[in-house]
Length: 399
Image 1: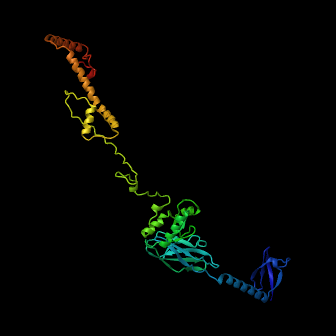
Image 2: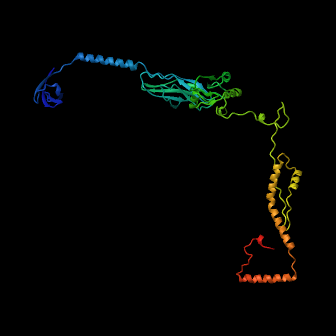
Image 3: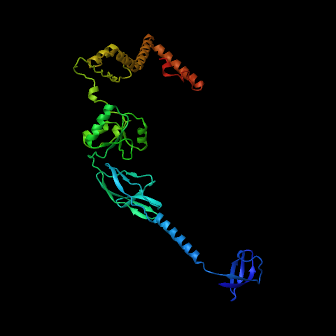
């Protein structure tokens, strides 16, 4: 179809064309002849290209088929969950690798008893998880929920019951450095109680048994907070028929020594020619004897060490090989306690001697002494009331 149009305004990019019925059409200037101006008339022939339409339709259909084959033929698969191991207070769950097909992963969540317990970190590379802190002999239900850009998919529900305290089948042991004889005995004990030994430290390892704290496996067990115990723990569990705490069996715990009766020294007869003398009891010193208080005029008796020693022997005092040291201690105590009494006694003796050596005063002497006292009182009044003996201690005043 041929159409004639009148050129209106010409711009660098768009040219305005006018139809015979006065309609405006914006047409690209690059498709018009270069010498046109305003008022020029141009003829445009318009026709439908059916061959091009059929080719475009075929290309579009092929593209749709490729998209359907790549993204529409497969869809994500629901997770496959199962229980790997169960103990008295924990459960280890595992699942097959996640099949997303062409969808993108949004999240992978774990549900316990119908309630969300949390999201699984790194679900594309992590295929196991451990749930701890469960109750003993209790039933739990777990399932996974996978969310993708292609929809939401849930796994089947797995019911797990935690073990009783007498059920030792959930114990999973990884061994460290052990002597050959100890390792053989440990393997036999583990088989008898229904537990199992695995190679290497895994997520389901419940205990790490070793006699030496070294090695790569020992370091890995410490990183994962797995109890590191001695082989005696397995023997104790078998002997008691139930799982025991590991506090007393830690590798770095203080070991309990032999019974106290074996180390106790015998005080009776001996057997086998070996004698153990009992340690002598420490001597008990007699408490210092309190002497009865006497009046000021009475004189205390002089301390006599021999009489005190004899008195102590009569009263059941100290009789041992260390009597000499005890006597010295007693003498020191007596010297300390009787030192003041001796000093007082010596002072009294000196006073008595001075009194005995002084002549008895006569009547005349008494008169002279009275006159001397009157003179001394008069001189004291003249000197301002101060006597020569003021300021002296009692021991310095002559009688």
